Length: 134
Image (cartoon, rainbow, N blue to C red):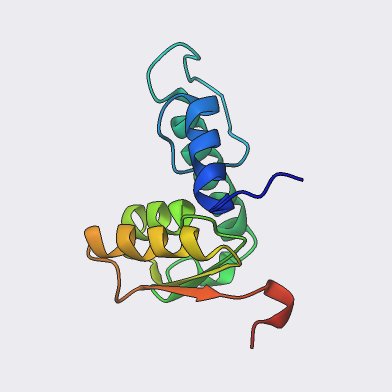
């Protein structure tokens, strides 16, 4: 078998090429109202899915609708794109985000991106398997 020097970087480069828009999101998207031909369409659809899932979760917590201390946990967070997006967009409600991910290089990217956006105090990156997380 072929040995890849750095499989995490190869995977990120692959997704970047396949998606064609340098998106940091690598999961399904919500395509309602998004033009497939516009630049960045995949990233927008992924952000729309992240926002949709966030709204769904809040719907389950109606008794805490006015809370300002939500903690967000992302299992398999990759580059931290979802946590960063939500922490920026919902800065009044999400007080802390924890990203749990196995891939060292993706975690480095997540730490760098959180720092670039001044979110290091609200986003923690944990290199672990979700079933081994304390």
